[in-house]
Image 1 (cartoon, rainbow, N blue to C red):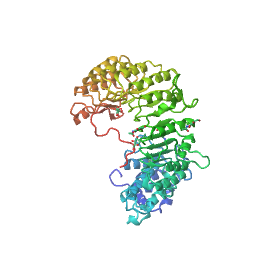
Image 2: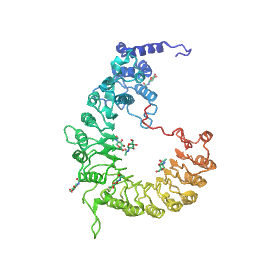
Image 3: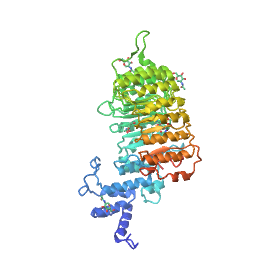
Image 4: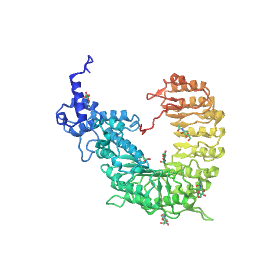
Length: 607
Ligand SMILES: *[C@@H]1O[C@H](CO)[C@@H](O)[C@H](O)[C@H]1NC(C)=O
Ligand SMILES: *[C@@H]1O[C@H](CO)[C@@H](O)[C@H](O)[C@H]1NC(C)=O
Ligand SMILES: *[C@@H]1O[C@H](CO)[C@@H](O)[C@H](O)[C@H]1NC(C)=O
Ligand SMILES: *[C@@H]1O[C@H](CO)[C@@H](O)[C@H](O)[C@H]1NC(C)=O
Ligand SMILES: *[C@@H]1O[C@H](CO)[C@@H](O)[C@H](O)[C@H]1NC(C)=O
Ligand SMILES: *[C@@H]1O[C@H](CO)[C@@H](O)[C@H](O)[C@H]1NC(C)=O
């Protein structure tokens, strides 16, 4: 618009060119001759389809800014790039999916736009294909008008007869951009590998794969992308040995009989007909070949102890280079004690002497019904894992005896300068005495832990003295939710803080500390300059705590980004939030006082 509110000649022309470009290709040769600044203005006004057309047709290579990072990455299709095109795509992404790209800024907004668009189309098509009455080709299913309109498609009147509305067209046009996709069973028919033939998939998430037909379709797709795939995740699937064998062999890359998968996860699924003495052969070779495997998650699959033992044994035998092993939420009690041989006299001997799991850094055994004998077995299994950094044993009834078995390991790890740093023992049926002993030991280590959680054990206020000592080590993360500290516990903790702390994150929620919680927080905030996140919800704090905490926050001017005070005994009123809205970090309010609106929007939240 001109100053007077009358459209300028340029903007009228731009509008006319835009309409022409949306409708057809006649103007492309002329646009190529336009000065760069006019093309930029045009780009900022175009709907996605027309912007795509413009960008593909206009070769800016010669006059383009050469510092654009992504240039040259696109094999085959050379295309013009400019700062404004990237900005135009970013605006289009943000207006269609406001939460997308919030956490990680993508390298290429255009790629993100079309990949997400294609995902939306596939999701829509999956819904139709799931209907019992459906019996046709996926590619022929029409995309809804609302989606077509979003990309700026205003072509033929009757979209049902128009090519542009069909899934295959979108796959053909935009499949090139798809790297990470989520496919559910109905999409894994024989047709899918053809539809996605232009894609070079890197990451696939598969849901509800249960029949042989789905496996066959999927395996073709996997094979087609075996060179590019690095991440594969199955959720809610039922997998027979034959299916697993087929999946694993389809991943082998053409020339070398190995695979390039880095992250492999089977989650909330069932393995059918498991054999107690051997794993499916395909899985054995998958786990044993492929030096790239980085993370293996087999969580919540009703795995029994034999399966877990075989997986661990296979990885160990193959000297796997795995970093992360997650066997959480299965039922594998009795497995760990089989990892060593306990002679009636003399020390226990680990099986597979000389073998070790040099690369493993994270071991998650949460929720596996493990008991004290398993913990004892784990102590010897850990001998094989010298570089372990993170151990999660939460939600297992290992009890005091279990933790007593593990304490010598923590001491040894520190003495030998192992990198062990992060221990989770939530809800392990531990008592105050044993945890006090554990924490006293941890507090005297040469290499103190970085992070400890003993949340959800019924410990009581007596543990506070030991916790105070632990806080004075260089510990950065402490979770003591729901351990029954009470007001006397918080008082003691407060007295225990005598020097500057290194704490970054602390969780003291559900401890019924009342006003003493606020007094403790006030001292903590002043003594822990690196503190970023505090969860102090559900502590029976009275309203005046808010004043105490706020003045501490204002005085400290620290780094605190988030302080959760939900569920305390003041009746929440919206007024409180506005009263304290001035306490901010990076432009966001620090205090969380009510459950809504949600403070952190999820990253990938399609509308
Ligand atoms: C982007 O386009 C605007 C006009 O819309 C122009 O003023 C600006 O210089 C362009 N920026 C770059 C980096 O090309
Ligand atoms: C693999 O998993 C790790 C850790 O869970 C994650 O950081 C990484 O981004 C994943 N890689 C892929 C390709 O998904
Ligand atoms: C398993 O999938 C669920 C979503 O269905 C997810 O919340 C959970 O984090 C996944 N677990 C693992 C170990 O990846
Ligand atoms: C590992 O190797 C040992 C001997 O080399 C063998 O007895 C054992 O069965 C192997 N374990 C697995 C799970 O393959
Ligand atoms: C867990 O495994 C044991 C055998 O190892 C079995 O007796 C028990 O029933 C299983 N529990 C569940 C909940 O599956
Ligand atoms: C506090 O700890 C509990 C139990 O481990 C957990 O569910 C909750 O998410 C934690 N809070 C934060 C902010 O991490």
